[in-house]
Length: 277
Image (cartoon, rainbow, N blue to C red; front, side):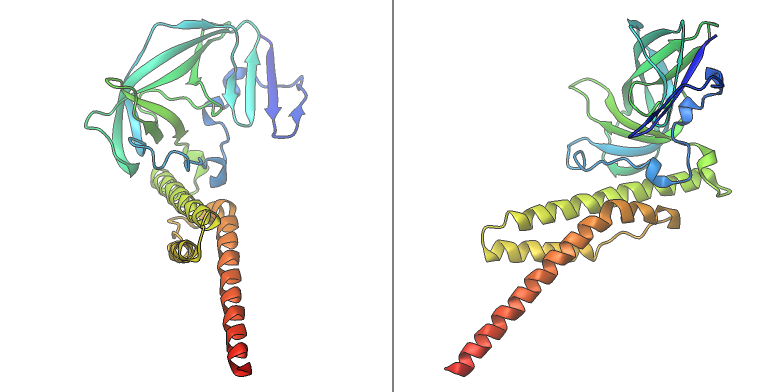
């Protein structure tokens, strides 16, 4: 059995190694396994205001696959590790199941939490099958899998649609209660997304302000949001604020400082003009 193991980088593709591990050793269901929370961060900004959008901590139950459709090709893995095996047969299938909710981290949910997603099935030459989501995560989502489900409403009469999924992996956490640490990390991820989205919206208000009254309102909203900087439940998640929120916070503070300096200069000019009179 020929295994071709590729290490994927944003900038470089590492050549195939003759000592590549067999596919069953490739942790494709744990793509990006790392204690760095930024490796699991999802940018949810464009979805937060969407009706029916939600982020849920939970597990999958009662999963059923639809009839399989053959694919020309596919891959095992995602993120930083991809494995391709000569002679593998590839299929895609729609999976429906029930999302068992442990905690609603954001949004609202309908009473029924049926969920649907597309899955790739790889039938290896030895007859074994590997399943993973058909996205760039390479995550495996089967019954009982704990994770953060990012979902949105489907068409009328259809189940919730899975947008993204972050699987729980205990090896990512040094805590003795890894599941609790995962829940806190996902809560922090949502909090950072909400803060970032609010900063972006208020900065846009300021950029598009057509008069001083609108600009003043935008500056007040920015000042208010800077005061709402979320406190991370895990100190490890401070990196999420540093990477995603800090650049916007710095831009906001710079705009506020410039406006304050301008007002001070204008006031001083007016005062000097009064003395001249």
